[in-house]
Length: 459
Image (cartoon, rainbow, N blue to C red; front, side, top):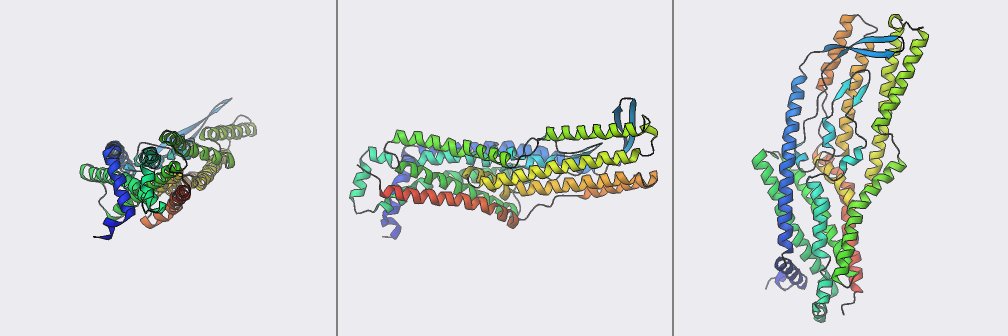
């Protein structure tokens, strides 16, 4: 007889799996996960295709020539016009195919830079941290639904048998509590992992066959890593459920406690950590930054008008004021982005204390749509903006022909800027702290459940 057939741990695991099949828990998990994974994959694949169309149009626009324009300043004594050379929007980064599974911060990477009297990096976005909040992608399904199903499969594994008086009978045999608990862990884990693997594989095959995605080796490796991270997260909640089952004596109590625990860890704690990051690393909102820029602009124009005695249009020093406006705008926007980046980095560090938040950061890093990609994209946007601003400032020191040529050259260089996607190794290194955090929660919950079960009253 093979060893696995006589192993008491595996016998209990098989019994637990059979029980989950009979009571339809495993089937419910399978149906729910397949449906949600496929629906999410389909919707985000359509979103990906639309963003791919936008990116293609943006690439076509890179061949458009520089055009002319004017900037109008409202003054008490009239209007001040300053001619300005402007070009097309700088290149968008191509959408990441893995965003159909983990969108992360990908939505913020499609924002153009606009050159006017000010430089706008992106559309009004109050907090990049919120972009990592639950969205209907695989990360959302895993974070919310998989954690709930894991508790659903494990929270009553001991209380159910205690109420039926079968746990006492099992322990009356020459079995250690360690074997019983380990068997329960393996049975509940398998009851969750099999539906997860089937649902995840179904979504990947669907996206590959219908939408032609995931054709290269790096994408396949990322898919495997995302699946691994999701599995560890699900197993952590299986252990949380077992721990809850060891500290309660009634199934009803275990279910109620499990529901409160799930809401606290998956819903409340991530939001609370975001608030903590906002408190300890305060940053202005985009609207507040725009208000500061507008206030500073009006102050510069008032000073210019006063020094020019109302003749700013003919004042030869007007170039100085225009350059001051541009530099002020660049400085304030850089300050805003730096403080938002610090806030996001702090939120990431604090988020390692929560398995749900760690999952959001970890999976987005593995997919190439996380914080690292976000910062790299902002660096590209800043570089393009600075090229155009520097070219515009040189127009006051050169002839019209030379200034136009400088603007065209700056636009050409801006069009060539592209965020280089990170390698799988770089993405994995970025995700390692999050994966370690989830694995630690898995281990801690398992050890705590074992310790509690050693003292569990089976009567």
